[in-house]
Each structure stands twice: as C-alpha cells, then as structure tokens.
Image 1: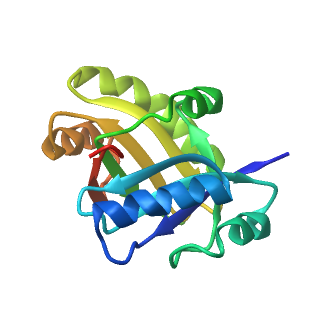
Image 2: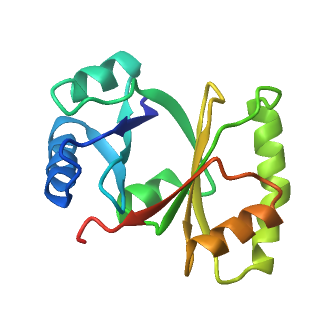
Amino acid sequence: MPTLFLVEFTPTPATADSSRQLIDDMGTASDLIEAQVTSDNARVFAIVEADDAAAAAHQLSALEPASEPAAVRLVGAELADVKAAKPEAGYLVEWDIPSHIDMETYLTRKAEKTPLYASIPEVSFLRTYVREDMGKCLCFYDAPDADAVVRARDIVSTPVNRLHTLKGLGA
C-alpha cells in the first residue's frame, strides 16, 4: 500500500520559473499529491505517494537537491479530496513537535483542539501532514494575514516554529 512522503526542495535559482519547472518535473517523475511554494520561491514542500522511502527518493533523484523523503500522515482532510482538488493554501506553519509527544498523543490533542478554530472564523485550517517520525508537522491555512494564523495557533495552544506565506502555483 502506498505511503505519503514529504520532500522539501530549495530551488536554484529561487525564482517563480524554477519553482514551476520543479513542480512540473515532480509531476512527471512521481505520484505528486500536492506541492506548495513559499512566496519567495526559496522552498517547495511536496507530498508524493510511493511504496516506500527508497522508491520516493528514486522517483525524485534527478531533481533539485531535496530532503530525504519523510513518511507523513494526512490529518484534517481526506486524501481523495486533496488529490482531486490539488488545493492551495495561503500559509504554512512548520511545528517542530516536542520529543515527548507521540503520534497517539498528537492525534488526540489535534482532535481536542481543532474545534477551537471556530472562534477565529477568518482563519480556515485546511490540513496537516505530520511526519511519522514525529520530527515536525506542516499545517496549512487560509487566512487574511500571517497575524491571523498566529492568533489561530495561539487559540489551539500550539507554537509556530516557522511561518511561510505561500503563493499559488499560477502566481
């Protein structure tokens, strides 16, 4: 059964054209689920589907320097919906998960905290990819600005280690 993997790229040069080309190449070389680009084109976060990490790495080996594929779990959305819509987000929060939190604790906490987002209706929590090794998670949001995302994270008592403004792939 295929697994989802997070692969992070740093396009060189960091331009819109190089980011678009990288994503086009990823789509040709792999089963690309989604890719999100930071507004400065410095990073591309890609989710691919593969049988294992070695297969994911092999599929992407000819592309830009990338992180090692890290197995991830999709939380807060259905994979079929993400595949069908290829949804874009406005903001990405990276959270370096503390070492004392295991997957079960994370998922329980997520289920308890997610309803709190309703108190900040201008922010839409879209989905999270949490690394199976619990190294970090990527949380995607739509919001009017970065400050609103930070307020939403405060409401759910979860820190922001890195906050990225994303741009649409057509931008």
